[in-house]
Length: 387
Image (tube, rainbow, N blue to C red; front, side, top):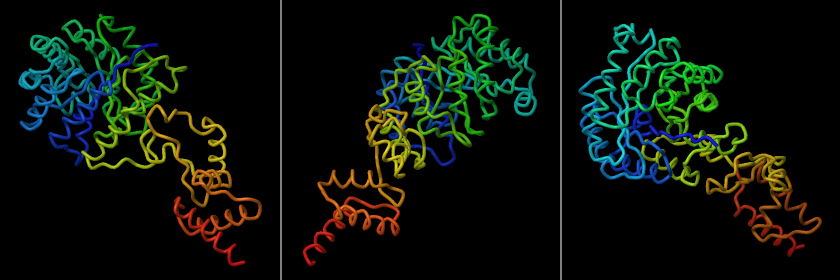
């Protein structure tokens, strides 16, 4: 099994979601939860952004152990110095430098040539290596960059000392097939690639962030940059929980694994949702309230007979159980299963009357709770006594 590193950027890219700024205490708590769960790298922030972020990164670097702590920096000397200073107490620090490489970014944002961008990248990686042993380089907007130019950039920064080269799909432009081809091409055409780990950083603007990350793993990527609940700029980032569970569930396809503990996912999801004030949508994969819930009678019947009929993810790995909420779509098997768990037993015509009463109530309510079933049973018993 290939090993894929989990690089979590919830505290950096995730917090760039509008309105998602977290308190220092929440940031520290989430960083520790990530470390305890087995995240290989926790990107704690962009220290040059503000004194508050720099102080938070420094606090995380000082107190969170058991994982690498990364800080982001542009290919600017002062940014790199800020990152190194914030990481000075980290047991395993990483400076993550980046510069844009696509023609649209070079022309309209940076207003420099590609040759100058390569010079700046090489100078920055060398400078960062003098301050930190582990340096990652990202080519911003890599998926809209000419492949030959991208490989030239990556070859140069690896020669300058970068240990990880990151391929960001910054604006969520790529498709899975394109990502797999791109990563494969980089593996084959970048000089010194055997000395570096290939990473990917995907966004969800077209709804393909997780698919693009997984296709990249098939192409040879060995690090995925992601966020808890998929939060991040615009439509968000590749979701950590989706990558971790997809690799576990489809090990037959990817032959890859992570060190991330799936039992930590639900608590992490809840912590991030609270800290960012961004509730998780109910139908969100893996962590949504409905991810392992079945109301349809056909589905309830199947799951009660064999869970894998309608659940491909082993929810017990996440520390949760299958949920069979009762409503107007529920069938006899699901209703009677719940009734029996409540200690209710019916025979013959009484069973039919119980189910009919349930159907009448379910037609009026979105959900039928356990207390409702108990009340139906009590009403039936009372009715029998008066007959």
